[in-house]
Image 1: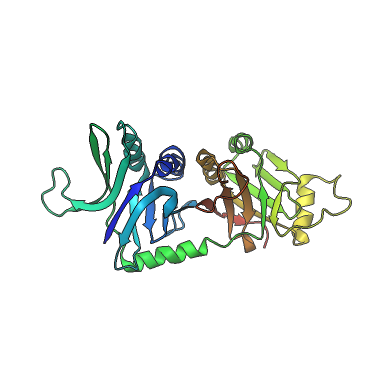
Image 2: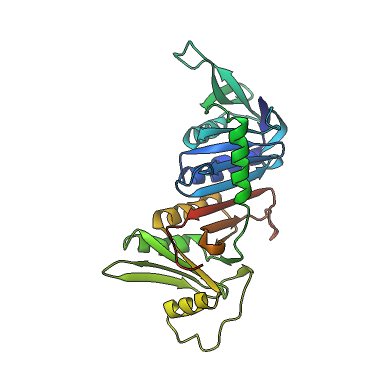
Length: 313
C-alpha cells in the first residue's frame, strides 16, 4: 500500500484556506479516501450518526506526480483529524520558498513507542534554506471490505433530489437561520417546485418562520397555481404538498447550521433539495472556474442531513 504526491499551490490553498477549516466545523474526524483519480474527504458515510458531507477533488486539483497503489484496486482509506491536517498544511506554508510539498503515507515508530510502527500522513516541505517534516497520525487503513462499504455508501450519496432551489446569499441566509435556533431545536423545511423554500420552528408557545420565494430552480419545476398569492406560506405549502409539488421534512437545526458552515469553502452558489420520500435534506455547493460562470468540475461538495420526521411522502 503506497501513496505519494506533491501538493500544488492551488491544492494547498483549496485545502488550508477553504475546505479543511470548513469541514472541521462539521466534524473533527473524517475519512480521507484516495483513488486513482480522486481524493475525498467524507463525514459519517459508514454510519448514520449526524450530517454526511462529501468533498471530492480530482487529483489534478490538488496534486502533481500523484502515485497510488494498493491491493484494494488502488484505493486507500483511513480516518484523519482535520485539526491536525489543517495545522500541517498551515505550517507547510511557513517555509520560505517552499515549492516542493510532498505528502506520502508512511509507517514509523511514534515517540515513546517501541512496539509496532504506526501509520502517518507525512508532509515534507523543502525551502531555499530550510525544510520541514510533519507527521499527521492516521488510523490503520481500512480493510478491503470496509473500503468496498465506503465506496458503496459514496455511490448512494450521488443521487440528486428532483427539485433543487438556489438559496440567497449564504451569509444572509445563515443570519436568518441563526434567529430561528433560539426558538427551538427542530427545523421544518419545505421546498416547492415553484421555487419556494420555507423554514419554520414550532414550540408550544410560538411558531416562527422565514420564507424565500421564486428562487432559481434546477430539475423538476411547476407553474405557480392561480389564486395562491393571497394565501399564507403554510397554506400554500400544504396545498403544494397535496398536489405532489412540494416536499417537507424536519431536521435538527444544529445540522442545518453545520451545513451552512460550508460557506467557508467560498462556493459560488448553494442549492437545497429534499430527496424522494423525504429520505434526507441535501445541500449542494457549486464552484465556478475562476473568472468564469462555468462550473468547476474538478471540485464538488454536498451535505446530506438526516431527517427526524418526514412531513410528506
